Every structure is written in C-alpha cells, then in structure tokens.
Length: 363
Image (cartoon, rainbow, N blue to C red):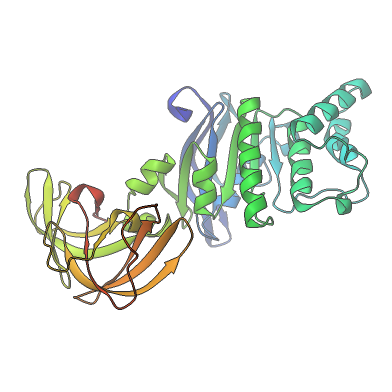
C-alpha cells in the first residue's frame, strides 16, 4: 500500500521529549497513512517506546505537534483520543474472564449493555476465541492472552492502534503464527497499526513501511525491501539483517560504477555515483555473495579465501570465509535439490559478487 503517500491519518512534526538532561526523542517528523501497518524499529533506548507513548497520550511532547485527522492531539488526554494501545505485558485483569476483559473499556465508556455484548461477540470472533469467553487469563496460553489483549484494544474501534512489542513473550513458532493473524486482523479492519519492536524480522514481516530510530532520531523510513536492499547508512546496513561491510576509498568513477580501493581486499567495482577520493563503505548481504570451487576463476570482485566454518540451517547453509587479506565474510547459500555440493571447512574457495549487488554508503 502507499501508506503516507495519500492524505495522512497521523502527522508528527518535529516532536521532541526530554527527561532531565536526556533527550529521548529528538525532532522526529513522520506521517502515517490511513490503513497502514507501520513499524518503529530500533535498539533498546533509541526512543521508539517514548514516541509511541506520546502518540497514546501517556507522555506530552516538549516540542512539536501530533495531528490525527487534522486535529492537534498533543495535549489531549489518552481517554479522549481515538487511539488505543496494546501493552507488552498485555495488562489483563487476572480476576476477570475473557469477555469481561474485552468489555472493560466499553463499560468505562458508558456504552449500552446490548452494544457492549455485540462488540464483545464481534471481537471474540475476530480473534478466534470462541468457547473461551468464561476463562480467566491464567487458564489461557500465551498466544490466547495476546489475542484477548488485542480484542480489548480493538473493542472501542480506535482510528489508530499502537502495539508495544506485543509478541515479545511468545516462542518462535507461536510468534510467527500470531504475526500472520495480526496481519489478517489489520487487513480485515483496514485500521492503521503502529508497532514498536527491536526485532528486524518481525518488523519486515508485519509492516508496510518501517521507521528506524537511533539515539532519539528517525534515521530512515522505507519499505522493508528498500530498507534491506538500499540502507541509508553504514549503521542501518549493520542493524537491519546480516551484512558484510568493507571500508575503502573511491579511486575512479565510470559507466555508472565506482572503483573502491580496500586496504586488505584490493579494488572492488560497485554500482554507484560517488566522487573520487571519498571514503565509503561497501555493504554486501550474505546471500548476494557467490562461492566457487574453482580457485583459478577470476571475474569481477573475486577474492580467494578459505572456509572457516559452515552452519547447516535447513533451508540454507551459512558459511564464514576468511579472505586472503584477512577479512572474514558471511556467505548464505540455499540448500536446493540438485545444487552444488556443500563446501567444507578448510576448503579453498573464491568469493565474488556482482557490482549491482552491493551498496555504496557514504555515511
């Protein structure tokens, strides 16, 4: 979807938040589109949860504005915003049943009993909790508790749902299943979701767009594919997924490619347009690197090396190869039927990549 390319549902402009002498969020501007699933991604302490709490109304910006449907809501209290938040620990009431937990916010809002019953039944069906309505939270699995919390957050029909690492407590298989369910619910409702996570894979699985935060600032906003394939900086390339990074200096530019001299790896030719003399980093994802048994083969960006170790991961094998100049790179190869025989530890190989499969980074 186009997300914020159309008229935005939410607009955040130069928002900052300080706690004493510490700046948690530093001049963040962002637009969220109607019906968009947006992820705020970043390491612990980067400011993403503080930003989410300002959107929910639990924190007030020291600077900047937050607009929802054209209205500045920066000073509007949480219970008066058409926004709801699902917390990391779910915050379910242990003494209440599933249906009572879902109904809690509706009762506080003063809705008629018939309306409450209808919405609870609607939410129970939406998150597939039929038959569990009378159970207490301690009688539910982690995935079921997560769905109760989601149903409660959605019951008041907010314009925007905020999710603070809601899947962090689930095991890997259940997490993947719940991610799929969350996407289906969001698409059925057509509601805007903003999720906070430090898990790159989760952000890329769920989101239409991802905003990467670091040290209180929003450093790049892009689709998952663009973020992975064309990171905006060396830091982003290293944070989002696995990557091989080489530092060097541009020595020439011609034909849409630059030649970059590396202290230990010779000269690499990479697609890009950077002036000669500039210091750069070259980022190459492990799956973009090729391995060859033929140590006499040449070619563009080819480097001899030795396999240091190999990890069989089912669908792929991840190799670590020490190049002749001393750099150690990661190479990922799909374990497809009929593919070449696996490489073994200690074997001499050639590592190479195409110029268009690398990214030149100037920061």
